[in-house]
Image 1: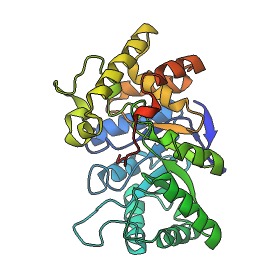
Image 2: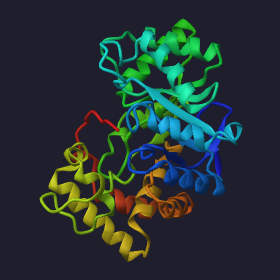
Image 3: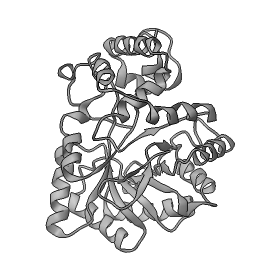
Image 4: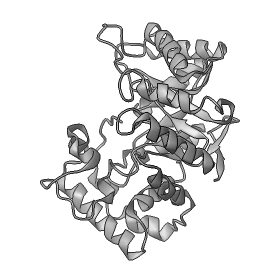
Length: 321
C-alpha cells in the first residue's frame, strides 16, 4: 500500500480510501467488521463515513466499534448537512446543527476527534461565513483536524476559500466530488481549482454505481445492485451511458482485467485525484480495488478509455452521493 499526502496538510493516507456507506445497510455489522479488518491487513488507513449513512448514524456506530482498538492508526472522515430528524433545524450547515451533530458523530464513532469533517452538501439557507466559523471553532477545540466539502460547485468552494483567507478561518483542505467515466464534470473546474489551491481530492462512485461493470446491461432491461434503486438509476438512465459501459467492458476484456478494477484505476489516474473512495459489500471485493491503485494506467490506455465518453457531450449537473 502506498501513502500520499492529504493535500497541503501534513497527514498521510493510503492511496485508496474505504467508504463505509454499506455499513449497517448493505452489510451487517459482522460483515462490516470483516471488511474493516481486511482493509487494515492490506494497509488501508483511510475510512470515509457520514452521519446519514444507513440512517440514524448506524454506519458511524459500526465504524466506531471497528476502529476502537486502533483509532490512532487510522484517518477517518464523516459529514454533516443531511436531515437527521424531522425537526426544522435537523439538517443543514447552520452553527446550531453542526454543533449538535459533531457531538453525535463523536459519540457514535467513540472518538474525541474527527480527522476530516465534511460539509456534505451546499446549504442555501446558511451563509458560508456561519458554516466556516463553526468549523473553525471545532478545529480550535480539537474536535476536528481538517475541514472538507462535498457536492459543492467549484465557484462556491472558491468563494469559501476566499472567505476563510479574509476572515482567518479554517479553510477547506479536502474536496469530495463524484468522478467516473460517465460523470466527468469535476474535470471542468473543480479539479483545476483543487490543483491550484492544494486541495486533496477524494472521488466517490468510480464504478458509476456499478454501471461500468455491466457489459450487456440495457437501460430498459433488468437491473441489479445499486442500479436497481431509483435514485441511482435516475443518475445514469441515459441509454448512451449503458453503451459507454459496454464499450468500456470490452476494453477490460481485451486487456484481461476486471472492469471494476479498471474503472477505479482510471478514476485514480487523474493527476488531481488524491485517492478514490471504494465501496464493497464483501471482503473478496476489496482485493480487486487494492489491485486498482497499483495498476499501470498508461497515458495511452487512459486516453483510449476517456475517448469513450468525450467531455463535450456532458453538461454540468448537481451530484448527490
